[in-house]
Length: 81
Image (tube, rainbow, N blue to C red; front, side, top):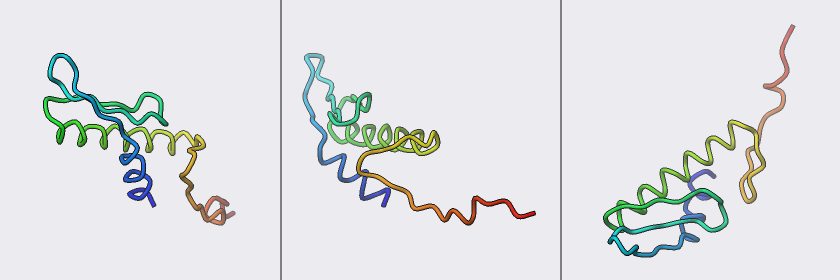
């Protein structure tokens, strides 16, 4: 589920070469998820790490993430006396 979401979002990534020769990548549908590096492969790798961090922070904060859902067994959330 997590890997599928990450791979789907990485397919939406937009890449460009900056004037300084760096590669820049962003996922337009997720504000603030971007990366840059000296080469394309490192840029993609960094973008994936940023996306993973973004996803984990949003899951931790219980934010709604369009296209991603966790199934929680609510019985585990009930404290036993």
